[in-house]
Length: 482
Image 1 (spheres, rainbow, N blue to C red):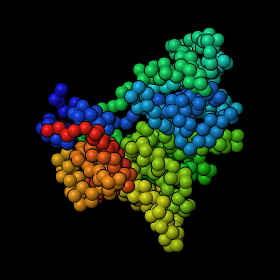
Image 2: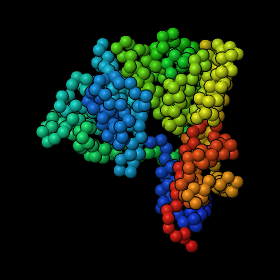
Image 3: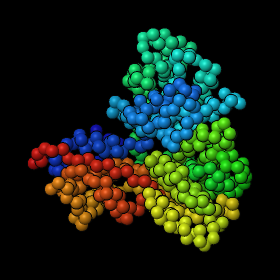
């Protein structure tokens, strides 16, 4: 078990030296290996929860994630800001994409269900299909089944609202859908959810092993994200040098995500356009939620998120949410301030103040001031994307990292709390895309000190355009090993 694969990022000599250090500091070898392996995994596998409205998807999502986060209301089409949650079952972590709360388009059941579910399925590794066992399989359910078959993703069938033995027979009728065994559950009371989640874990892939270095094969994938009418389609048309996407003054005219292979700077890139959907009066609430779902799906597929901000408007709460979604997904990030040519001197002054206060969480992201309409500074977009990708893939050798950590601890020790002063003992980079670090410490490190460490890591090693994940393992109280 001495090959590099088993040591995550560490080569044999580095691994041996690192483990000797861990042992000297009183850490258990298995504990250290486990921490490195856990932090070194790539993106978490994604489970999409799909089904028609009012079958209990959001309640089931709350049950899976173990807290009441997905909004549950007794009417379809409830607007929600977040659609992606992190869950854990039997020691394994995964992401859940909730597609609940969407009001059906009365003009065509098949079209609306297909559109609603497709974006989530596209980004998912497996699907949890929820059916109301008390109603049985409807035409809408059959439409979802066709979708799932076409997508070819593994599916787990949940027969919901089975509150007791009497409902078991109702659940059994759902074998007719041809998706295999229906798992009878009550999302409201939690009945049967353990067996359901065991099956979900069997269908989900393990979290992918970390790969260091460059991506293997295929063009790099870029998601253009931002709130409706910010100019995503115009930007795509400008980089593609032709009108490939319908651009309309009405916010949200893009209906389908468009993947475009575009050559820029001698390199082929894959751009995913994620503009909002057309708002129909009876779907006013659902449309914003729908756009969030599509944005989340596009970001899951991408390596870089180019976030467009409309400079003619104030930076909004919606902008902030989109930025948070991209950061939490661990993608490389570029901020493109669009419609820059439309600003007067006064607006530019106030915008710079806004950026200083409102955009602190992504102060590390490359920034370009562009005009999708006129093409101003479009040539700066590719270098910014390349910078962000380079930061996203940066790897710091363990020896260099520990020399740096030693200097930090000596010059800026952690504040004393309760008569004790926790110390960072050593650390390693467990993964890239985005960079993930594990620090081993003698005590709990406060959030402020962790942010200070991140800031210094950026100053020392760059990491421009990428989020950084830092996890801390505290040495258990036991005698130091001799």
